[in-house]
Length: 251
Length: 301
Image (cartoon, rainbow over all chains, first blue to last red; front, side, top):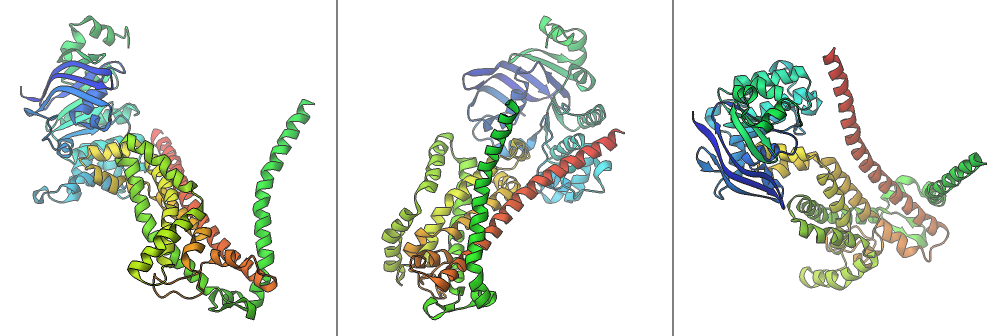
């Protein structure tokens, strides 16, 4: 099994507060990894540090190594813009840009197009199909993205990331505000997408982690408690804290 | 008894609130009552397009003043808008927190400086510079534009900055996550999204430039003539009133009030436009939310 991302001794601070402690994790390619834990465990920070969106907070500081295909993304010669195209992210709230549906998706590809990519409209259609949104919006691609429902907006955000043809997709509680039907649609497309991408998701509950992931990592207070296959963690957790959390004894 | 007190205090507050509104109404009525007769006598079109302003001889044409106001305001806008918008982008997006803490109160202070001091500085520094290096009398459209541009900066900067800061955080994060650079994010996502606020800021700034009197009296030279170059001296609508009100009487005084009517209407139109733009944006998002809700409901069924 090939590792797409290797995290070595990662420590992360906001000012004096440490939110990730001595974190070590290998993330295999073309699998869905669920990272979960109670609120404040550092899951969001972990995801955001994988494409350096954390850099936006001036008080953030980190130590350690995050290797993407063996290269440290925290080294100064990394092009952050390029990195963010390789490691796409979907946030916990839908974040459409103030423009039309089509432009929302076409925006990323337009910024950096190569001849061989083909027509932009084909890229947009493919992305929308992959995110299971095409059938609902194909007749109204020019309307503002804000006019879509919450679930549609979130799938639009997934499509927007897919259109960039990233290598890794981060999903930070992507279904937190969504109804079960939209959630199911997103989960279905994720299972389909892992053939092409490495997917890291912070699920919004343990059931979701159980449904879609190949591997599961449990975090608590910024530490990795355990990481293993889906079946292993849920059926046979090694750590008492993991089993307490899964069975609902706390959290 | 308690009920009576409640009612009484309600009435008192209403009365006080009305007094500020009534000031507006009284001023409006007063200006129009004083100014309209002369407009009626000269004829509206002739009044605003007339080239001659000779109150002693009964010639009341304010076209040179309108031309003066337009040219000075345009100059101030050309200088002040780019500087102001760039400054607001810097403050909202680029400046480190420490610098912002110094800049923001400094810019607010700029708004608090009495306009006569702006005029004084213009007269002492800007006018001689123009006279020495560009020729002409120095007191000119250019001098007025420079001074006004500085005066409208605080308005443009603070309103634009607020509308940039008020943007949802996810616009920026979403754009950056798409692989846009910080500059692309500012130019293609944040500026377009804050457009209505920035346009309102510009309009209010222009309104302030049109209404300014004291500073421009001191640097414009105030000659009643159609300007041919930016180095020419002009007179604006406001300075026309400011200069002559002290000794005007009868028809002359009425003509100055009529000048005030023209000024008043221009400012009203500008302010209404600014309000319309900000409100339109507001109702648009509300409508969207409403239509979203109905859509979701139909989808649920």
